Amino acid sequence: MQGFHPFTPRREKTTRHARRIETRPAAYFPGYMFIALDVALQRWRSVNGTFGVRSLIMQGERPLPVPSGLVERFIALTGRDGLLDFSGGLAAGASVRILSGPFAEMIGRLDRLDPAGRARVLVAIMNGEIPVDMDSRELVAIA
Image (cartoon, rainbow, N blue to C red; front, side):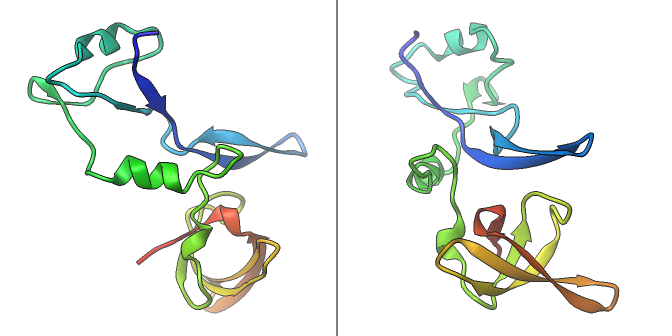
């Protein structure tokens, strides 16, 4: 209502509870959202008084900007379903981080990626590489 345009990057998150598996959209950066504003022209202090906003991230007396192009890149990677999709940069042999499920936050090597969006990742466990099949949206390529 104040004229700011927020953007909250989202992803699918799978949770398990009481023998039920539920997949639902969740914030990629829980507790954070991005807004476009010009600190020289807009009254940005009113954002801190907005219901549900804790505070802007500040650098001294001014809001801290994110690196140029970061939010634009996130928007470009957002699919029609409103979820971030990093799978565009995936290729066989690449190192990947698993985002959700029982192997969340583990690093592996992408072994195979099929056109339907399924991926096989080799995860190093107990002195060997274990193949894990999953949806490619649960992966992000790392350098």
